[in-house]
Image (tube, rainbow, N blue to C red; front, side, top):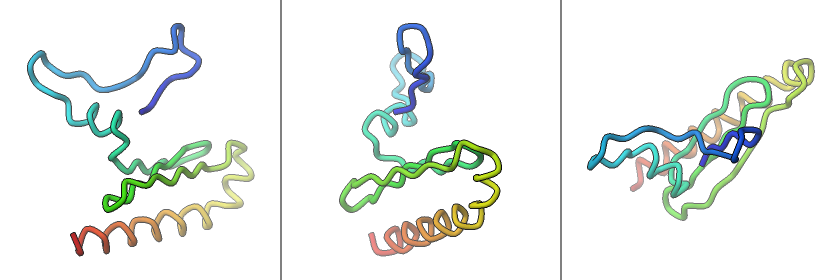
Length: 92
């Protein structure tokens, strides 16, 4: 679940749903069942294995120069995770 930690009352920033209609986004985020790919300086990715529901959290550098220096590494790691998830989806 995504939270804006510096907000008054530590309120959550989650999707809106009409009364009587569940929001799939909210359900997926709260249950931690959705892979999130973070792009950019300081971004975080959350990789979910749909067979086991294990989570892997990875974060990009917050300092712009370090981020640029490691960009190739970040992209390669993300592509590898995506390829791995696509092979799992093919086998489900």
